[in-house]
Image (cartoon, rainbow, N blue to C red; front, side, top):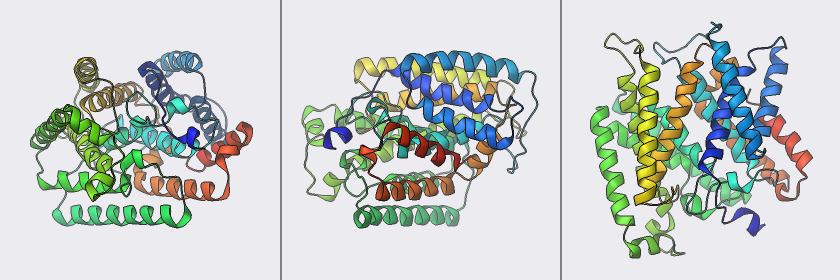
Length: 387
C-alpha cells in the first residue's frame, strides 16, 4: 500500500495536455447524436473514465480526432444553454464544468490501481494530470470573479474554513487516506480556497492583485532557490505548525497567483459596454503562448514544475494549460453540454458531494485490492452521479 500511494514521479507534459484537452472535446461530442439524454451522459461518464486510464498514444489519437470533429461541427451548431448569470463569457460554462468533473473523477479514481500512478499528484517535481486540478479550479474561479462586499467575503471565508475543519475532522474520525506531502498535516483545499478568497477581498483592483501575487510568488521562488531552505522544505520536520503545513502555506501564494491572473485576464475579455470582446479567442491564445514560453524559460532557470513547492514553473505551466483549454472552449462555445452547464453553476456543492462520496467509498471498499473491472464499474457509476 505504501508503494502504491507514495513517490509518484508524474508523466510527460504532452500526455497531461492530451488528457485535459481530450476531455474538453469529449464533453462536446456527446451533444451530436440521436441518443437519449441519459444515454449521452452515460457515454460521457464512460469516456471520462477511459480517458483517465488509457495509454498516452490512445489519448493523443482521441484528442486529435475529437478536436477536429468538435471544432468543425461547432460552426454549424447553435445549441447554447441559457445562462443564469447577468453576464458570462461564452467559453466559461464548459470550461468550469470540465474542471469540476475531471477533479471529481480523479479524486476517487486515484485510490484504485486502475488509475495510472503517473497521473497522480507528484511527490515533489514533475508533470501530472492531478497536479493541474487545483490550479484549473482556481483559474475558473478567477475568470468568474465578481466584485463583492466585505460581508460576502467574510461569509465565503467562514464557510470554507468550516468545511476545511470538517474535512480535517473526518480524516481523523474515519481514517481516510491523507498524504502529508500534499498540503501538510492539517491543511486541505478548503483552507486554500478560504485564504485566496480573503486575499482577493482585500483590494478589488485586478491589476493590483495580480502584480502583488506575482511579486509574492517570485519572492517565494527566490527563497526556495536557497539550498538550505529547499532542504528544510523537503525534510520530514513537522514539529511546528508552519513546518507541519508548509505545503499548504506556499500553495496559497501559487493559487492566489493563478486566481488573480485569470481575474485580471478576464478584464481584457470584456468590452467597455459589458459584452464579450470580439477577439476573445485571439487574446486567450496569445496569453496561452506567452505562458507556454514562460514555462520553458522557468523550466530552464528554476527546474521542473512542483505543485508541492508552488514554484514558478508550476504556475506558468498550469496557466498555459488552462488557457489552451479555454481556447478550445471558446472555439466550441456554441456547443454546450447541459449537464456540464449545471455543474458549472454549482461547483462548490458538486465538490462537496464528490468529497463525501469519495470518503464513503474509501470507508466501505478496499480500493487498492479492487479489480480493474470492478473499479471501472464503480467509477462510471460515480461519474454518472454528477452528469
